[in-house]
Length: 282
Image 1 (cartoon, one colour):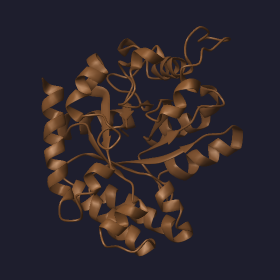
Image 2 (cartoon, one colour; image 1 turned 90 degrees about the horizontal axis):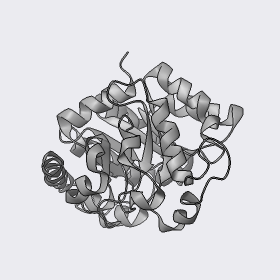
Image 3 (cartoon, helix red, strand yellow; image 1 turned 120 degrees about the vertical axis):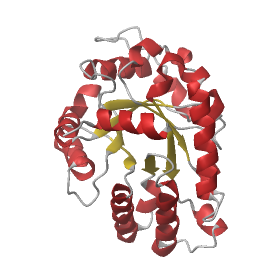
Image 4 (tube, helix red, strand yellow; image 1 turned 45 degrees about the vertical axis):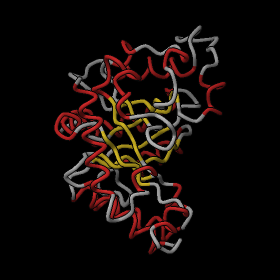
């Protein structure tokens, strides 16, 4: 069984780094002329998957927009994951879960187990309780060929004070919280030939140097980079943002593409995929 890191590397090589965030905001449903309910959610999300198929390699449903519709929203989400698998897309569940002990183990079971109703290829996860608290989901990801993306330096400005705070004890004393997470994750990937199966989330709108993060610490680590598009980062700037590890980046776009509507998403994805692939190859 191929690891998630191996599968992701294959997708990045063959289809490029672009990822479509499936974020069915209420205002987007309205712009599409859809009802703000499970039926509208289903229409937008499955059309997004159809548009992505054969153009890019990764989609990232933002779970909050499904969760707000309760059980009906989760039913749609199950369809979205199944459709993504059928279309040959890697699906990242953007759930940002995190806890300790049996609780975080259950999160891993829900999102990373083959055959689970909510089975995804990877999930976003939080290490606020320490990277060691994620040992069970990490073991599960390895066992099932799945992946994790641990939040490190996120694109929302409110997080900067916490993520740049200096660690005062332990292995990463003297470094920022974000840099400690990055170093710990890279250590987990030390034996990978190219990419490991545990990645980090690094916002495209942050300067990594401000967080004490260096590219040398990310040579085998997948990078999920939100912040392109409406949040302000430009895809053509990806090489400048990530330097020597540009080829490890999954570049997420969401609202800026979904605004194109049902008939325009595919063309928008083609344009943006070409833009970012050209930038990375320079």
